[in-house]
Image: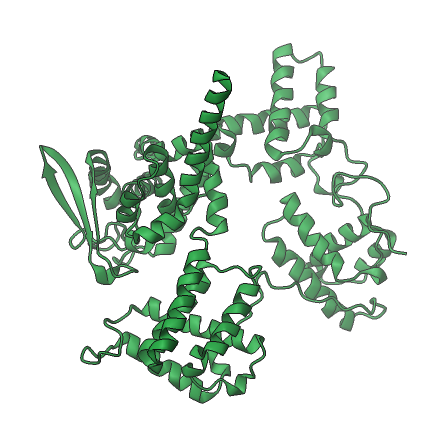
Length: 567
C-alpha cells in the first residue's frame, strides 16, 4: 500500500532530515566565546529576524546558505516595516552567522536524497535537461515513499502545492508541467520505464464558454449584424441604439452574447438549434441561461450576470423588437438581479481589508511624498529610476484626488485634458475628459488642488524629460511618443506600492479606496461619492454600503459601551 507521508519527519519533502536547522546555529553562536557578547547578540538577532520574516520558527529552517539566500531574495522589506538597508544588514549578519558556524552553501547538502528506485530510473536518462526536469518530482515522491511505478496524477499536483508553499522556484506551474511532459515522453523512449501516463495539470480557470464560431452560421451572422449596429447606429432609426459604442465595449457585448449562448447549451439546448439572437431573449431560454450562470456562484446573482441581462434587454428592445409585455418581463429580471447583486467583488473586498489597519492607510496616503523624497536623492546617480518614482507618485496622487479608471489615467493628454487654473492666487489643475472617452459615456471633470499641482509641475519639469524619447503630448509618454499602455501604468503603480509599503493594491482599487476614505470622514455622504466616482447614486450606495455598515456598527458599539458605563 502506498504511503503518503515521509518515513521520517522533515520540514518539507525537499529538506533532508539530516540537514541542521537554524536553531542549532543559534545555540552554537551562544558558545562562541571568541566573539563579543554584542556580536553574538546581533548575529542571533539577525537569524531570528529572518525566521520571523519567513514565517517559520528557526527549528524549521535549514541552516544552509543556499536555502536562505533563495528565500531572502523574495522578502519585501516594506511588508515588515523595515528599509532595504536594514534588510541588507540582517541578511549580511545572518549569512555571516552561517559561515562562522561552518554551515554549507551546497544545494545538495539540504536537499533530501532520492530513493534507490528513483535513483535507478534517473540513471537511465541521458539528457541532462530531462534529468533536471524530473529531479524535483523524484525527490518529492521519495519523501512520500512513492516509488516510480506507484506514481499517479495526485503526486505532481501535490508537488505543485508544495513548490508554491515553499517559494522554492519561480513559475512552479511551469516546472511541474515540464516534469509531466518529460515523464510521458520518456515513457515512450526508454525501455523499462514505468507504464504510467500522467495527465496534464488542469488549467487555472477552465473555459466554459464556446466560441461564437462554433455556433450555426445564421447565429454568427445575426450577432455580427447587431454588433455592427452598435458600432454604427442609424440616428434616424428610433428603434436602434442612440450612440456608437467604443470597440472595447462592443467586444465585451460580443463576449456576453457568447456567455448566454454557451450557458443555454450547458442547460440542455442543442447548439445546432441556436440560430438567432431572438432565441436568446425568449423568456424560457433567457431564464434557463441566467439560472445556469448563477449556478456557478451558488445560485446568487453577480454584477457580471446583471450586465449580461442588461445586454439581453438591449437586444430584445433594439434588435429583436419584442412586444411591451415581453420587454417589461426582461426589465423586471434586470431590476431583481441588480437588487441582489453585490456591487463589490470579493477580491477587491479582501484587498481593502489591508486598509483596515490605519498605519497601512497612512502609508498609502503619504506614499507620493515619500517617493518624491527618495527620487530627489537618486536623480544625480540614477535619473531614470528617480523619474519613474516621481511618475508613480504622480499617478498615485491623481488617483487619490481623481479616482478615474486606469485607461483614462494612462491616456491623459497635456493639451486636451489638463488645463492650469488659478483660484484665489492658488495654482490648480483642471482635468476634463470628454464623454466619448469614458466607459459610461459621462464626461469626467476633476480639479487637482495645490499639493497635487505642485507634484504635477515637478514631474513635468524634472522627471518627464528624462523619460521622454520621442516628442509626445501625453502625460505618461511611451517610448514611441504615444501614451503608456494602461497595463504599464497599472503595473508601475502596483509594483511601486508593494515595494514601498508592502501593500497589494492595483490601480482599479483606488475607486473603492475613495469610497472607504470618504466613508471614514463623512459617513453617509453617498452623494459626494457618486459624483467623484462618476457613478449613479444607486450604484454608489450598493458598492460602498459595506463602509457604511462598518461605520454604523462602530457607532452602535460605542453606544453599547456608553450604556454599560451608565449602568
